Length: 291
Image (cartoon, rainbow, N blue to C red; front, top):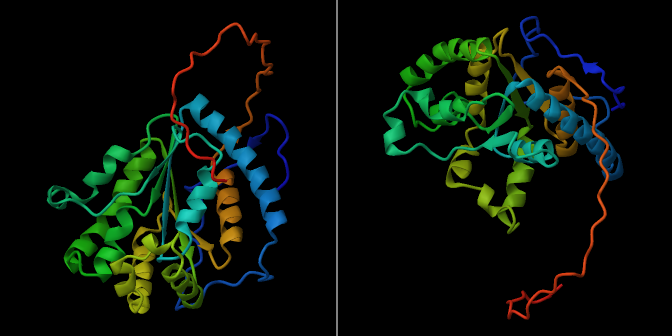
């Protein structure tokens, strides 16, 4: 990524004119030229540049009162969590808010389906990121039998109109599908079994879903066909390489939000005087220095 000139507006793609993204068929992931893993040094260099741009974008979002909503969807092990972490690790959590809702409560199950998501929609000066979203109804709920076929059909018919209302209210809505091959997904899921840092990511539903690849493929394709609208298109990201997909998604996101680098005030730390105050000899409890 090249550095943008100071105060240059980054052009955003017009959502109303965006062509439909390419469809995914079968089990394959669209191949890119050169499948070698990106070197760590190169990855960190590119990520740093993107993080700097995200900070500029954050300032613009606050200054102009933008309302941004990002949806991340994909199969288990597609890399959604890592991509979201890369996107948010250098910006303010007060501006970039991540929403990952648990299973609905008994009360929420009786509500209008989209109702539980409405309180989390962005206000002015906010970027809200959904780590899975209302599209659960088109995917896991449908495949695992947590809703009826009629409920899924009703959702797919209704959600484009709801998203249009969101966009017309001033929300910039961007939807990402992270796509991974069955071989790479299996490798990642198996790695979670013996890694104590990742076992929490492997739920009972993940295990049950593992053998339902074709069912999830069919649900995904039906979702694309029904909800890939001109005002809220789906963007598919190849997630075979976790580092590449993080860079690609952040770069794409920056290109879809028109922002301008605001002038920065020159910061200079003032001189300070230390030594006039002496702390009392209070018996504080210190943690052991094991490392």
